Amino acid sequence: MPFKVKCTLVSFTGDPENFPCHFNYEIGDSFTYDGERFEGRICNGLLKNMASVIWNTVFYGRGDYDRMIYLYSGLSARDPEMKKYDGVGFRPLKGVPEGTDPKYLSGIPAAPPDTLIKRQRGFTCDDTRTGARFICEPVDLANGGDMLTYYNRAMDILEKVKEQPGMTADEILQKYNDFEREEVYPPIYNLNVSLMLDEMAVVGYVEMIDGRAYPK
Image (tube, rainbow, N blue to C red):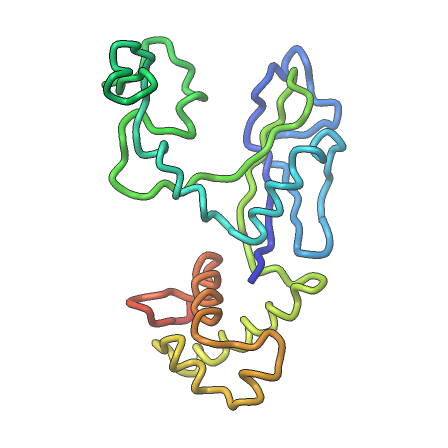
C-alpha cells in the first residue's frame, strides 16, 4: 500500500549566503505527492534527483535503508597493514577525527549502534553552489490515482479494527465473506493485510502490539 510523501527543505549544503537560492526556497518549505498530484512549489533544479527518492518513499516508506550493514560498523580509517585481516585495508576508528564537519556524521554514527537506524531519504538540488537539501518521509497513505483502490481497502480494514480493537490479520480476514476477500481488488489474505496494518502503523492510524491492531 503506497504512502503519501512529504519532502521538506532541511538545509543548504552549499554556500547560500554567497550563492542564494534563485527559487527563493527557505528552510521548512515543503511539497507533497499523493500518488497522483504534487502540491507545493517544486524548483526545476530538483527534478533529476528527486524522482527515484520519492518513488522509493512512496512504496517503501522509511524502510530498506535500515538493512545497510555499513551503518552498524562505525567510522573507519585507511590502514594498509590491516589488509591481511579485512582484505581491503581499513581499521575501526575509536572516535571522531578532530575538526570533522558534523554534516559528515549525520548519516553514519561514530560508534556502532545497538538498534536499527531509520535513515531519512533525501535529495539535493543540482546547483551545488547552493545545495538545497530535502528529506522525504511518509505522512499518510496515498489516495491519488490508481492508489485509491489500496487506500479504500486500508480504510475498510481500519473500520473493522475500530469496531473490534486487538484483532490479528487472520481475525480481520474473518470479518469478510469470500466475495469481499477474493473478488474485490485488491484481494486480501494474511500477508497483504499484515502489510497494510504495518503501513497504517507507520503513519499513525493504528498501533501494532504483539501482532494485534489497535486504533489510534
